[in-house]
Length: 206
Image (cartoon, rainbow, N blue to C red; front, side, top):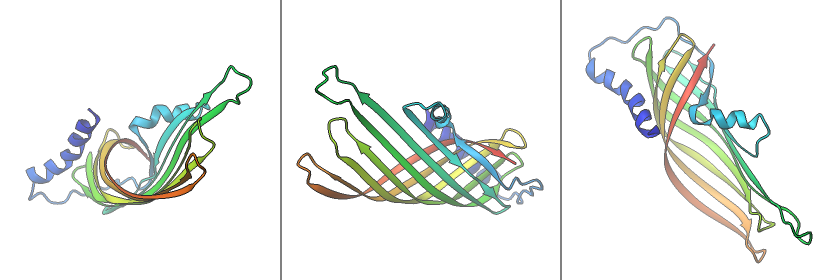
């Protein structure tokens, strides 16, 4: 369902360019230059993070827009932990957890279709780190990755300072993972991943 909604939002911008191919470029006199945005799906988990929940996530966007370009840093995080309590006093209680932190920057060309709608195309480049531990092991697994990929999106202005939009990124990651197995033998794994990442977001402009 989320992917369908995102596709509709993104294709809205593409549709306007096909319906009005000879239309002169729209002049926007009141361009909002800076703002703050949140990934729609993580607003609830972000609130949970503020209440010291054992499971939380969030994604923050910081758009900086001119008439032709947009630079948008993005910070995303996730944390999830569970405790395993033993009734037997001979065993210590254990905890397993998983977390990651991702920082990337989007570099985009902006096309103002109207005072209410604008589209953008470009790429995102960034880094991610992660760590995890199983309750049945004392060993912590750490990972890091370099991320890059093309991205395109559109946003519709509900009001002068508020927009709702969607973005689709083909995220390519090259990363390594370090840890040790049950025999305390250290290992390092390297892998390349490719993911199609849809995002729904709300942006507030100042």
